[in-house]
Image 1 (spheres, rainbow, N blue to C red):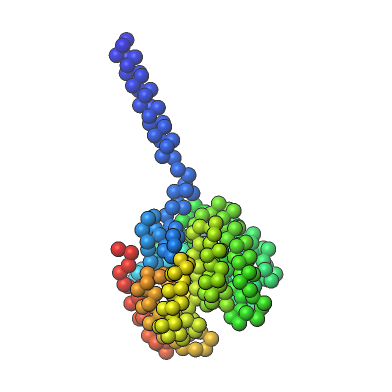
Image 2: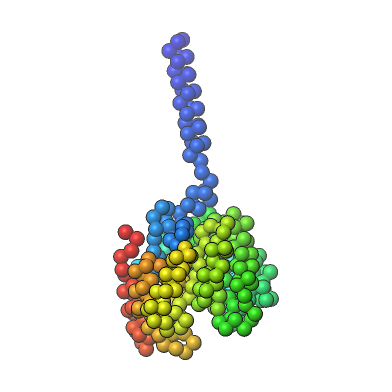
Length: 341
């Protein structure tokens, strides 16, 4: 009886230990995933290790699956979502009002994830028409502003437990010449509202916040970046490097990058390419500079079309070096470099 009682007591004891041990290890799925990618000071972290990611802007919404990016060692795809109104969260491809077939956001993400590639979902256009693209527009002045906020909340809620899905809240807001009445206060209010929509959906994934002047002006980050970050986590600012960067000399570029670093402003260059506004440029020195600094970058654009000087690929899938300062080979060589040891 004594041995039996002792055995029973031990069984109860170990059962209780197992119970409380299991309870202690139970971590909500969202909390587990929220720790996978994070921003600290100027760095992107995967778990506790700083990383540098190199990738390209892609059009997988029209043809999900990104295996072809593997040969270029791409870590990340910034995805063009040009018809937010009709693109579905999940499900089979659909034909939209413009006659294009659109793959769901989840299928785009799944295609990237299959190859360990991070996805940035970026709001490029409301309904797939040129007149309703996001670039150059003040968010609150668009007719789709309130409807877009509903969609943004849906994105945030749906992907909150998928840490390799980062949302960029707007592509290239405000005019390049500030002729729309732009102020840094307007930028702060608009960007704060959109980030809050994501966080209020309990989505703690990395959020990309674009700069002013259609993405090329980082001065807003120098002026109000630190105050914007107060009380916010996992925010990464997106700068686009075209003529306002690539036509500057290395001294000027270094000074601008140094100022961002001094102020602990975390940035990614979400777009860069050799052609913009009819001007041919050479991104080589700029890319070498940011690579050596450990800054992440995405090229414009992952596309097979040698008639497009910004396309990285020819129709046959080779690096596109046609009238573009050897852009395809330049970027392929960058992506092939060793990083994240």
